[in-house]
Amino acid sequence: MLLARISRCDKGETLVELIIAITILAIAVVAVGSGIALSIVATNEHREQGVADDFLHNYAETLQPLYAPCTGSTLPNYVTIASLATPPGFNPPTAKVTFWDSSTASFSGTACPGADPGLQQVTLNLTSVDNHANESLVVVLRAST
Image (cartoon, rainbow, N blue to C red; front, side, top):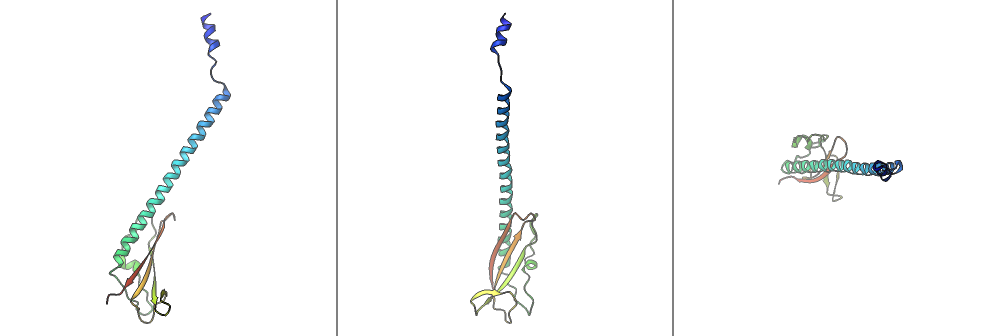
């Protein structure tokens, strides 16, 4: 008789209640998991941008005393002049040189002018292999007098 009373009071959970509870837990797990994955991706991109920024600033500091005058039609190649090792996970840096144009009072000449004006604008660019980080830095170099 005692056994019959225990089984009547112990109803348990229904199948519908279990399915709803499992569905709610699954949605919560997916939300937390995707948030963690997004955080990992954003952290990696931020790290790559920081590495690229540090590299370009070191690169620019290396270039400051290395003004290379324009000779004939040969543009200075600041990528080989600086000769810094490219950080792992990045493409080799690029450097675009423009020259001071006194007639327009701006850096506009991409070709070597007849006489070197003594003022160059070097745009340094570094891109990660996965293209998540793309950093640029502009440096103005002046010939020592």
